[in-house]
Length: 268
Image (cartoon, rainbow, N blue to C red):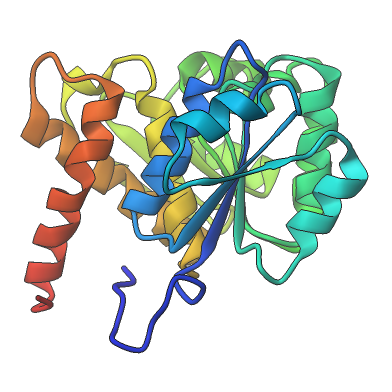
């Protein structure tokens, strides 16, 4: 885990970029961006189309917004030294636009998190996604639930084995979400997280998890460790909140979780 020191400022703590969804589905990206900042990123920006900009700008205080409507502009932002990690998928939509933007991000050489629609959009062409991941110079984290996993990798026989095989096949760190979450790396490493609550099974919870992973990556954490830490943090927030939580509650709980982690490290 990375914790800020007296020498840090917002730029040294990492800039997290979220590619936002269209006007009808802005909530997922907003939650992911806030989660990234709550997880420690110094800055977060949502990239969106011109139609949805007013919604994002009106509802985001700490998070910046920017209009991006073509791959050339997206590539320029993603490759900028001011960008440290990227997320696409939450609320993105199952469109050619989502597929093209995902492939563009993978060419940036930056750490990327692919979630939700950025996974399902490749259901009929998974090899296209895997090839792009393997050619990417940046580490990649995939965060599927069981249905999204099976769209890309086929039927799950054994969660641990299937996740490990998927990580090797895709070249990405795979976070197979569930009652116990499996985190597998392309190198064969595997961690199983039992520290969670069944109450985390609520709309938007996965978007928050993707944002926490993004926040860790933006601070320079290696992908396998970033995913592992994020899953634990997400689970700990869920355990503390308990019954009837919603996704926004998880984000609000993150400062308390992070404060406890800092105390364990002897950091005030």
